[in-house]
Picture 1 (cartoon, rainbow over the protein chains, first blue to last red):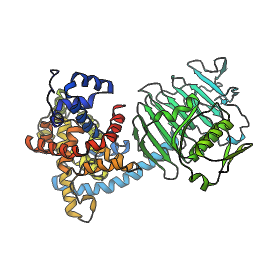
Picture 2: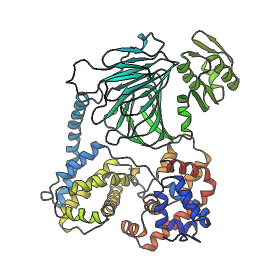
Picture 3: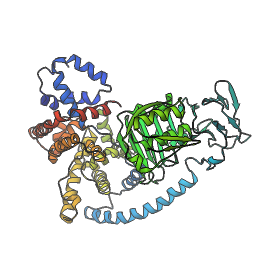
Picture 4: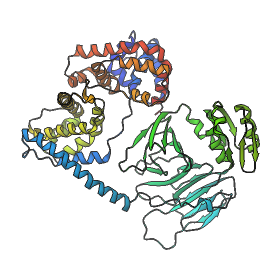
Length: 404
Length: 195
């Protein structure tokens, strides 16, 4: 290709040109595109116009569900051309429908059986959060030991191949499971972060997880052979180490997220009526945990997936500022045009308080934008917030009362 | 695609794994290709099954190809259009099949899901709605799949001039809202190039 190939091309000429279209589709980074434009500086404007139009029609397709794929393959691979005449084929097809219905019921039964007997994770969070009387983060090991972490921001690191876990760079706890070597299933350790605290965790595979206040997270000392499985109730930011052979699988109460290697934030508190996943890099599959047939939804960067508990569905939408969702990792809480109720919900978790307010007062107030330093005291944060959002408040003990 | 040529020959000669290889390579694509034309997923699967039955039945006499996907698309599209036509005749009350098979672009689905139907969104939708079904289809092959005119002519069974004209008309129809929608286009551009 000569470098001056596109000289004098109109937008339309470019859009007819196969080579140009392939080029636009296959450029991976905006930098590559910039470089290409520099080489063809005379046609730059037309090229930008043409590129925009091409990009308008790009798609992210998913995959057909495994169940349907297998069922169809079953039919096709068992098709016998000799017994199927031309005319008969049509009739057989309508019978095939009935046969398929029966097949579905049988295979459904099989699936349920599989679900119960080879359940992907047998581990469940116990419902006894209330009996945790500690103000400090707790590490509950799979061998039953409990370690209290005394810092506001603790760091936990799984030591690879050592059956031990290191805490805050200075303490190493043994995590040898007592002579139970027959079990192949990964055993889970659990971290419990109370409100007002957070923690950084490094898993066996190098994946880093930042856990936000009021979260629980379960992880094994060593992942099993074909999957990396963890459980989350709360909010966490993940930087998953890449390993295509071994997908990383996160279960929350409602959704599952499958990852090959990527950065994203999940907020899935059991107490909240919706959960949000924001993808910053890479790609993930996400699906409803309650559904028998996994309808996987593929997320691409700068998207937010919201699961609503009432609607029981996942909605994908663009996220213009994905960075906001992980500001908490750095100790900030940043929000843009957020309604106050949502802001209060977050602050409740960071400061371990309850907000009390009259719904009518709150819905009358405008959405707010801002950036709060979570190292500040609740008093300081509330002083700023009330000024911005124009309300009056009173703090008494564990409650914040909004008066207006 | 030299490899395709040998895989296809293998399939014609009854080689054991050729069929399952072809199936696995193209099934996702064919399904979503079908979804561009109709929302009836069972119907799409029926058509795919029917097409594979035919391939098996006539495997010895099938022509040669060095592009299996294109071959399957052509055959699938023919069957799909035929199937939609007979459905329409059978049940003219069923409004799913009331109109011509029509491509729905992802961008349109995204916009439908977006809560806020901004004014800009409306422009872009109008621009897309102004495309007729043939223009939509040809634009899908050209811009979404990046096919060249030879391939498009083969799939749609039209001449080069017709295909080119369809693209031109589509472009002109879309151009009208380009300037008004730079903002939304830029945002889509960011989303797509950020992968």
